[in-house]
Length: 318
Image (cartoon, rainbow, N blue to C red):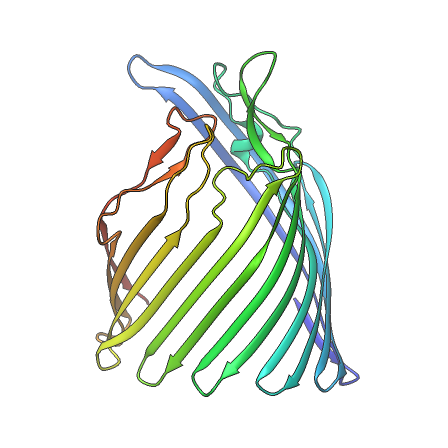
């Protein structure tokens, strides 16, 4: 990466990336009696070039423009721009108008996985693409709080979905739908002395398949999250709690998942012993029963998720 300031008004950043995947292995077999369904061993590579210019038009008006070009061994090239106009009418206020495009490359499972019975490969898959439009207002509320409100419109094309081949009945991944999602996001983030921090966010959205005018599977209308972090013992042991809410989602058979509320708690340490960190977490603290919609390859229309679980983690850095 290379960055340089030009004429006091331009901050230019340029760079390149290269990734070589030497071995991408997928296996599927029965142990007893042994039967091999799939042994797929591929390799791939990708590279990218990117350029960005942050142009200070005025002291309180910035134009940030970037361009990225990616090349994937599997499908070819994709070039995507991102432009943001940022206006600060006051020191505590910022208004952002953002446009960009992006893509998601199909992964090896979507491209090459097959079992010769129920699932088929599709090496001709193209990437999903998206155009995004955002209007964002950021406002500091006193010394400790920052609020954000945003309106967004996303246009997603060539969505990768699993479908049954009408001739063979085999499930394959295909570029199928065009989905449009629009909505509002709100967030309040607070930081106080002593290690106290809280963040609350809420999103309301409407997503529609442009072909059928139906809400896509696994697309909630309402999402909310609350995170808090607080000290338990000086600056050495902290606690954290997280509450996640999701409204009901449509399943593949047209049923509903119902709403879900999940609570996670964590205790973590730092600076007790040099280079040693410890954390313990309990997920789904109240053992709520909820499920996620299944896909075409699943027998279940609703897949039940884990109940109460815990994890202990010990990290030593040297």
